[in-house]
Length: 315
Image (cartoon, rainbow, N blue to C red; front, side, top):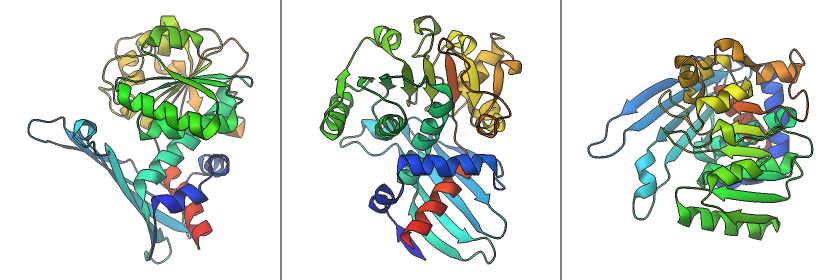
């Protein structure tokens, strides 16, 4: 069994190529049972989460991702990663382990590439203004992935952690030379943006529906529990709403679940899954004035696709 670390993944998992592979995985999904989702109680701190995400493609590869999510880690001194994971890739014919892969980097890259894939269908072709809500590790990958698929010319970052945001802006500026800045005014930033990508662990609405201009694309990634949300119900109700998987969204996407519970939307508001758009069964963005929303909670098919691609490149 080989080991594939974060540096190896950085070299092998280009966002555009990974998005192309993810498109194939959504079209022809492997077997993927519901993820195991366990709460870990911690004295005097916010609870942690243990996720187990298996998937297999008959006669080829199978794998399982083990992820821990401990939000309080970000406030330690020095701060620790809030999300840590490992992925075990195996031969689906024999069950023999093939690779131990850095699950944290794998998750960051496949999540960002999925958002980039969705943006191909839902963001305006000429979208040039990106607002990144959040400044953690995933936010960095989301910005890079969106840059890979849209002609972004300027970026604004909003975060509750101002030190993180400033460091983030410096990194993006040095990498790309693109105009990038930090803001404390989320309302004005939302009105300015053409793409709004959110990657936070918020339980309270951040982005308000009344702030969204026609043509905006919302990319919601952070909230992965029913009690979490990054938008208010109005933002969801105003949007042409798409999800990565219907089962995942209805079980875990707090932005959608809470809007359903209050009666602001019904299940009929969810136009469909990303796979249906890729296949042409349903359409993505229909015009330049629609507000679109893609809610991603993650699927094990994404991990298996990314792990398989990395393994083939590494070997």
